[in-house]
Image 1 (tube, one colour):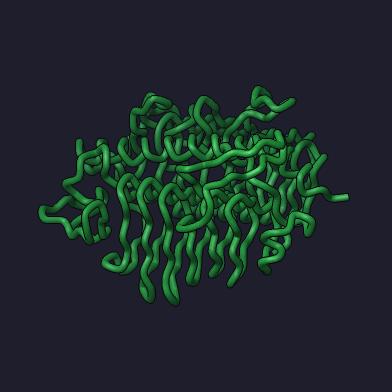
Image 2 (cartoon, rainbow, N blue to C red):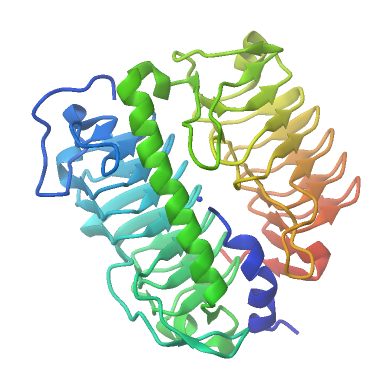
Length: 426
């Protein structure tokens, strides 16, 4: 029997540890004190003259539609190939929030309002008239694991991998888990966590744990979210400093910024240290690719971000094929090892991290062995995938080791070595 609290407790330490312009002009367009419109004059640094400690950074590959209808607060990081579309309604993103790779925000109606300290993790989607982290209680909440009460007076909001917010209100001090969805008109109240793969379509489903779609926030969740915010604030500063040194530093195949958790450096491709600002995809930091640059260019699609700016190194074998919109990333102090002849489908996300064993993240790091097939929109995190295995579309493998020749079907959440298997409901 499916038990929401048990599922959330098992995954809490696993899933939420995401720690996730062409020229600078004078006289940037600024909406008000501390708020910036990402117009051409303010790309990639917004505002262009802001000190690196407070500036926001927009990767040059991000798509910004109708920038005068978009406002960014201080220390916002917008990652490669994110999309902000304010063509028909405004988008506002408050200070200390981050918009990670392939995140899509499409505003309509009254627009999308994103509060401070909101984490929009890789490939999250926000559409319609939505409010994220702009309101809601700071506690007290009851931790379902320790059965103690706590407050979070400087709140965060977490939208995890491949989740979707469709015209909903997500209050602060909440988590919308990976491959889950909150539908139109629903309010997710403070202190709640949407479980992986769930489709929340009513306010009752968003509040009642007995219906199996939400659990209660924990103190561990809060601590992990704080870490994610700190890392992405460092990205806003670090990429700003790289761009100030030379705008070409933040394009194509290039440096990772030097931070407290990453030593910087360049990729190694086909045995050669490589910097190519004109390359169409973003390949960043200490990533070692076996294919030559010419071969790689022929094998991979577009809008790809292989970003070793947090965890590193990434060791990547010869690639069978890589479709559009693929993302590699890793938690600090962890690496990625990817074998030969792997096929990466569209919007595949591979995220480095150590498996959690008995509540401690000291198990094997993310690794995919040879000749594995990864379906569209699949997610691999804190897992080892044995050779000649396959993961179906819109599925996730978390905190698990799969034996060789294992097949995970489509729309499946597979976690803790199969102790948790859930459908993706939408």
